[in-house]
Image (spheres, rainbow, N blue to C red):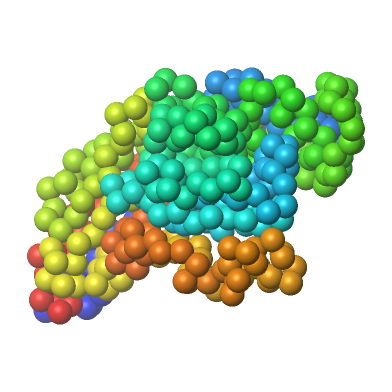
Length: 413
């Protein structure tokens, strides 16, 4: 009789893991407060709850200012606009990330330059960043990925040397710290998402952090259709903006979510360390260790590396199918190299500034990024953060399921 669940055996896990997003009376009370106030929208900007949340979130991440935005894609667009990135300017981005990290450059008529990631933790490779700099380079957008923070020390030094703007993409790392200071406060801007899957969520939403007053004023104006308002009217001229304001309902939920962030971060940090200890004992797997300069680790996705040679040649995707049958759902191609994705296809007729660097458009041949390619299609395994929100027994079941697959590979090969 087969032992593996995918072959008809009994699954390791039938009990569901903690659901997400978590909520309690605090979200309910905040939402009802806004409902009864009849002050629901983002205007005047920033509105009451949005201003309250922005100040609290910025303080929690050691930045001087926060500007609430409709979502975590607009945050990147708006940061580039506030930094005066112009048509044809180049913006260096990692290829192993969500589309928005590169799309923001296209959206402001600039040019994304795709750079590969480090093989140890899949964050932007600083050595390759320096190689990619040209006279047109104006900005670098490192992504803090999964549970890892990009090497901010080296990237900040590179940006200072070449006079480049640094925008931290922090969509995965709410609450994390680098050298005792919150992520998102090290560069010129820090971009956070509050989309449904994120560590803090209001369904949608985002925020940009900065400690530069001029940048803060420009961000406020751009978000508010280019208007100037009290506290953000000291700069000369007018900016071409858009309505990217956050509603009071979303801000209210985020106030409640922020109150729980530290507790949940520490919970995930503890369970993540325990999972690493368990997985380190399994041949064929390699865990990603936090950089020692990360003084607070958080886990949006816990990523580990799968080596098929340690599983008798079983492809990662077949391993994931067997793991799902045991009650542990994980992703392999959670991210793919951006230039290899058909969905990322800006037309040269609409974005002519791309033509010089990409005369045939952006496609799989636009950049050679072998580390990201291997991660996407062969190596990386992504576990979403609810797997780290329960008990030690919940964590142990992950390792138990993997051991079960490894001990019964004959049923799969």
